Image (tube, rainbow over all chains, first blue to last red; front, side, top):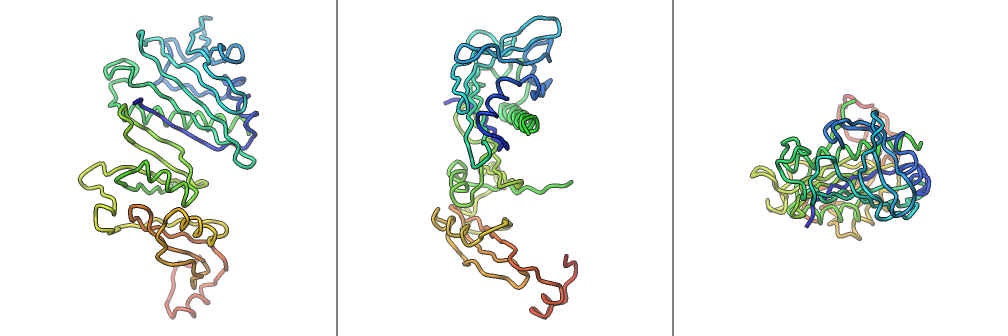
Length: 156
Length: 147
């Protein structure tokens, strides 16, 4: 069984529009959080490079360096997006995965983020900042809620 | 702006998440599960309103199902339209209807029910604007703070 963070929000736009904004304009709506930095040089600007499976999510840092957060594992426009999520400090074997689904509800889209795999990151790892597991996951989930609110505000 | 959120305890909170969606139309907006798949925290939304759904996480937190059905607080949902349809949906999901939809003297039409673990909920819709004078005449009460 895997630890799971789920955050969902309704956004007033079509699933295709929300999907396109999620992948195509992530640099504009993303809100970095110092608790969950990808690298010691973060924050930079996030971007999906390429389209479809094999595309990758990266953070472009001010130094010009590009950090690869993860590869896209599923790319179904307007329906589902799955990508890997690693921080620079992760050791081999530590890996988390983000699944985003886009579901039409009337004229809105229910966007659901599920972030799994944090059990692969040990309790004493720097990424957890010494937080007890449940508190870490809760703070991370609240950040995802804030990110989706940022996406909603951007798409509106 | 202050905001009030009720946190409800269930013996089986994951079952409650499904039930509250089916019965009342709540949508899951936040869920945290630990490495064993146990629910650590969750929130559901109905429009702009939220409830938290959790387990019996301390000796002082219990579901009515552990207390012989006793409630010390109840949650009221105010909706904009068709409280009768809302009640039918809740009944179809297995809610025990304690009071069928009834129009109250203050202008709301409301029903009362128990959920899958015995929490009492009331759901109301304003169907008529009632003045303070009308409410006082209807009840014989002296009313203060009538909006």
